[in-house]
Image 1 (cartoon, rainbow, N blue to C red):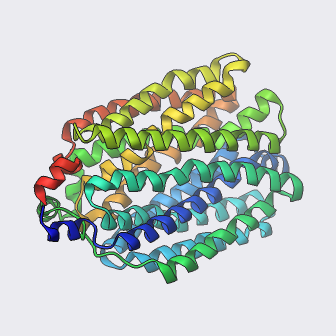
Image 2: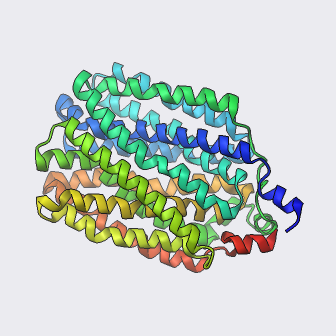
Length: 422
């Protein structure tokens, strides 16, 4: 490999590391903000006297605005610098949190939570797109695994801190506190992160593929992209539904306080989610050296292994509930890094932001937009165990879709293949 090729693969390691640290920190805050609500929703239910189905609609409306904003956000990301867009989005979602203390009826809370989705939609698209321009294909799984470790850790902090602050000072106070880190990180990104060259780390093969798929509707004919996205949507259905309702499930089945349940779920999610994400990323990184389909296979494996643990958690004896939940979380997070790497590797830089917007649109439209409300609907007519049980079917479909997608995995996902194109 020539010296020029090496420069192409790592144009600025320091700038890439700074971007990875700041964007991972922002992703952490993004998920803290998102999961404060599940930590305090029993307090919200008690104050506003709403049904489980109505309570589940908070998450539904959040993700509805999230997916409505995604297409426009993707177009902006493909045509304008991403750095200022990330800063604006972070300032917006942090600002929305500050207004929660003014909410004194459930409909106003719906509006506020829906507005939060607009700001957060921008980051879910721009963050991975920027990292893909800092890291070449063979390094993206590692970078995106680190980036996605923030998901379980952020969710855990949101659960635990939201419940603890809410129980001590009222549930509105938790949203005030969660707004501060996002504002600080927006400023840090503005001054310390640079905008990478669009497509600067893509191989020659990536760019050739981009010329053939520059029309955005061509994404629908890209099976590697579509099957990975559909599999991701089904795991998102499960993650969205469980994360919204599991603190409430724990409170109702074990009669714990909100703070105790929030701490239990938060600590468990932090440990199992971090370990699962790291293990899945490491497994995919080793496996992909020998087989370019590894990113898809790790996702299929994680979803498939999660099925028996989810069933045991929701329907098994009380003494096995928490161990089964821990294993379900661990296995479900195995695919967090690999699925994102599979998606960004399946498209060229010219349409990457739009592809990520389409991915977000589909995974939320088919995933966590309907799942919290569907679970609440079933719970109102039976119990929360049966409501959560609907996520098991989604896990089966997720595993199946990723197995189908593995047939179309791009050859340049592995280091050996990438080196051949350099």
